[in-house]
Image (cartoon, rainbow, N blue to C red; front, top):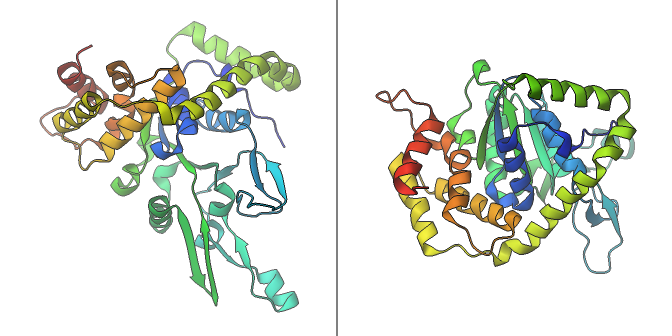
Length: 326
């Protein structure tokens, strides 16, 4: 299996790296949507982050990455990163009857799908804006419930399916359905580097990795280990990070000022700011944490305003200056 490019060696793209890191700290944030140019490291970053995370403990032989029960044999498995291809059938996504066992043994058995493999890890969808509508509907149901339910061909199967949903795409190739767009906790915009020095460094590091991957991985192993320790420490600190009432009021005021629908915007902003505070080692969420996460948490939840030609990021920044001056 090819080795993943070191997460710490990715040049620039700080907002994307921060969003993915925070989703690993607190999966309840709701996943990450990365939109931007081709060749900007979107898929590389997802696989790199998963590669530096510690393995998960599962029941031995579990096809669902289930945690072991008391007294059950256990083993360790890498944090799963599962690709959901655009042409995937419904059976491949949710699972179906194991035809081989049915034909050779006459047994009705369930063959788990991609959602089972992604449990406790990452489900990655490249070109998510081109995903077929019926697969989108499936993902929405599972994302809402945290369970995958399959009832067909005499089978009735229910299993946990909780994962960090990561989607990437190019906005020039089509828009994302609003229902799925709203399910992503954070939205990140990436672009090709504009500075010559930064582009040169990207080329230099990629070439060094391709020519001598083991040496390159060894060079960045310490930095990746520090990042892994920071994520694990943040996970432990997270339950103790306080969110003052004034911070909650600021979240609500910002969403009202932007006209964001529903309450998912406030929840995502609060959760991502709290995860950032945990990563920073802070005891409580500050206005600075809210300012850092506001665009990522809210830019994709804004209604189009025909009288305002400014982009969503600019609109969030303007509202921030009013609600949370800083």
